[in-house]
Image (cartoon, rainbow, N blue to C red; front, side, top):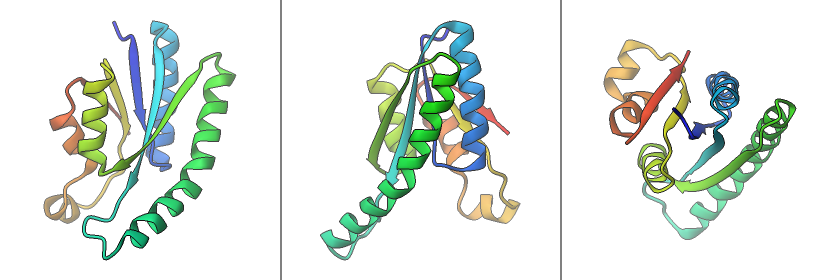
Length: 139
C-alpha cells in the first residue's frame, strides 16, 4: 500500500514519536523511508547575513537529529534517506511530497492552546490540509 514514506522531523518529541511509527509502517510495507527537516528561513530577513546565520544555527540542530533518526532506523534494519531543505515548513514539505511521489507523510502532533491554534494555527493542521498524499498524525 505505501511504497514511499516521509517523516517530517523538526527534532521535537512529537516528531520522535512519529519517527517510531514511520519505522514500524515502513517495515510492515517494506517501504522506502525518507525524512525531511526544514531549515526555517526568516520571512523578512534584514540581510543575507541573517539568512546565513539562521542556516548555520539550523545545521547545528539538525545534525544530531539526523544522526539519532538514522541510527534508530538502522537498528530496525531500515535505511533512512535524509533531506534538509531550506524554506518554510508547509509549502516546502508539500512540494517535496509531490516531487518525490511520497505515498504517506507521517507527522508528530504537539498540542497548543486553543487560543494559539486560533491565532496562529498549527503546522500539522496545515500539512493535513495541503499535503498531496495521505497524512498520518501521531500524538
